[in-house]
Amino acid sequence: MKLLVVGHLCKDVVHSRDGQERETWGGVANAVATLGALAGKDDTIVPICGVGPDDDGVFRAWLGRVPAVMTDGVFASGGPTNRIHIFEQDDGARTVCTREVAAPIPFERIRRFLAGDGLLISMASGADITLETLDQIRMEVRPRGTPIHLDLHNLTMGVAANGDRFRRPLPDWRRWAFMLTSVQMNEEEIAGLAIERLNEDQTVGHLLTLGVKGVIVTRGQRGATLYTSAHKEIVRNDIAPVPSSVPGSPTGLGDVFSAAYLFECVSSGDMVRAAAFAARIAGEAAERQAGVRSTNPMEDDRSAP
Image 1 (spheres, rainbow, N blue to C red):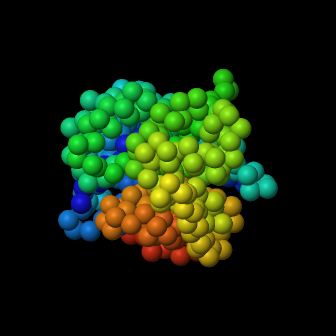
Image 2 (cartoon, rainbow, N blue to C red):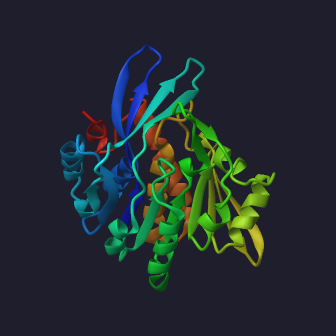
């Protein structure tokens, strides 16, 4: 099985409440780490992302620790690696600021890798690819029926002049979702997606009429919901949360969920099973981030130096 991951590499700078800072790989790296841990000996993971000149060697060395990863899709971006600052608050909330945003990944960097079994597009920065590039990807893979899973993520966020992110509707949201296999959002993202005042059921209904086969809404410690359509009726599949001792929503769990979902969906062809599997893998990742337990062989390789 060959799985492609398209999106911006990020360096997450986490500012903890005690004044400490730590840097970790984020964005597409979270999905690659998850897929690398799940991959079998016959699986290949192909990240397609740019990396800044200061981080190129370190990131390639990090990728080199994962036998399943093919690094041919990683390219020198010419500009800095995406950098995100995350400020943890006393109440458990987080303030996120964008300091550097990489240029969108051009279609020509993606095209030659598209003969795969599944494709994850992670809008980690919101500027990872353009809508025109997504249209080109759709046209390229449609004859092969390649599943495309889109995590909208920061596509639903704007960036203020000072770097602060803010929620804002996406005027072209229908075109972004058109004819994709599945689309993933969290509750805040789907609530603010449309310019029209649509509730979750209404937004899901619109998405399922656009050729989308599955709409996933992640709900943190309350699990997730997979919406599908049968006989022109919306079918709601609520995925029970995985018991966790971790409060809040640690960074990157949406990326973990999307990667695990794609892996199982391509493997089994069952979206309900894939959503349940993804919820379990994301719950285990939350425990690892909190230092409760360690079962992921890549855990020691997740941090940037």
